[in-house]
Amino acid sequence: MTPRAFWQQVGWVFAKDLRVEFRGGVTLRMATPFAALALLLAPLATGTDTALLRRIGPGMLWLVVILFGMTVTLRAGARESGPVRDLLTLSGLDPAAGFLGRSLASALLLLGVTVVLAPLMIVLYAPEGNPGWGWLALLTIAGVMALGLLGSLVATLVTGLRDRTALGPLLAIPLAVPVLLATARGTDSAISQRSSLSWLLLLVAMNLALVIVGVLLAGPMDETTR
Amino acid sequence: MAPSLHPRSRVVTATGVAALCLMAVGLYMAVTAPDEETQGEAARLLFVHVPSAITAYIALFAGLLAGAWYLIRRSPAADLVSAAAIEVGVLFTAITLLTGMIWGRFVWGVWWDWGDARMVSTAVLFFFYLGYLALRRSITDPRVRAVRCAVLGIVGFVQVPIVHYSVLWFRTLHQGPSIIRPDLANSTMDAAFVAPLGAALAAFVATLAYLVAVRVRIARLEAAVARSATTSQPVGASVGPPRLGGRDGG
Image 1 (cartoon, rainbow over the protein chains, first blue to last red):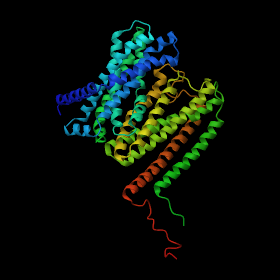
Image 2: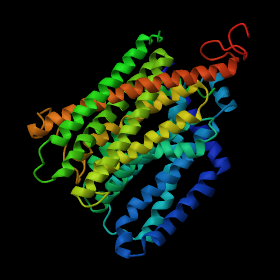
Image 3: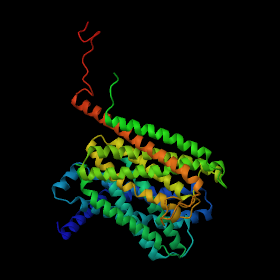
């Protein structure tokens, strides 16, 4: 397969997943409001001390994005079980292209969730500082991309299983801990006008590792979903 | 005459006996080791904590290698070894966590410290591999289970270097690596503690080998039972209908 045909397939899967999401609207109508509710309720559990909330705000945002975002990415993966997967295989879809397309679509959805939740976090938690917007943008993109890749990988592993709704987060969230650390600490640094380069590099390394593993192992994993 | 053991069973039994002997030697050396300068008696826990951590790393790495071997050669034996090694690795990770917490209570005054990057990352590692075991139990098709678990074993192992080097990458209460050091320099540990630690490590590694071998044997028997359930063939030696007395029924 030529690189052009490969990327064309990536684009098709990406567009298909987004179209399904826009028609169903689960991320927008359910996952995002649920995540917003978690941001609203967290201060009731930790205490409404303003100084504390200012400090934990960015971390809470990323925790909520990871916990609720994972349900979005795992759900996207679960859609492609059984007949849908058979149809994609029959149409000659390269498993690696399918993996990348699904990951990119999940990452875009997570970016949407983060963009909606970030202003809410700023209103509710009022973090102090003069943010470095460039760092924040790079950290957000690298963070959601890593979550998208991780979610797609784990979604394939739990495809077709009866316990997948419990098992998916159990497998994905421990693996997402470096993303949580890098995005939360990196956001803290960016808000304090410090360099977030080391955290960004951690995310880039994680993205690269996930792309390599996902692309190399997409074939064997795809066999098990038929 | 007593039935003779299969050669493979003899090796497993010999490994078990060796592990037991090494454990006795390690225990003796740990108990008779001199007191540590600042930690006192609590330092003796390190003769369990450190070897169990290293043994867990070895087990999880063996699980990764066997999983990769399965993906390359599709050998069912490799899948059984991978599963057994990871299962035993989870056990050693649990021992590491528990002994670390007990040691922390004596030396730091708390069971759990969020400032200790290694403690937190080890707990995350433990929960991830619990997920691995849950995934294994959730899949009934042996081929699907083997592929998916091999992939997960490979992806998940990335956490092991994170656990080990977390003490260098993050500000933490835990001391830096004193044996497996990134600069490949010699151990910073006093010589009086190196010998008991080495003996304990040998005992733990032998125990790991024994437990993995036994677990693989159990997994083979489980697979035979599962096969017999689908093919209605009896397991092991042929079993005849119940008869009274001897072969002639009399």
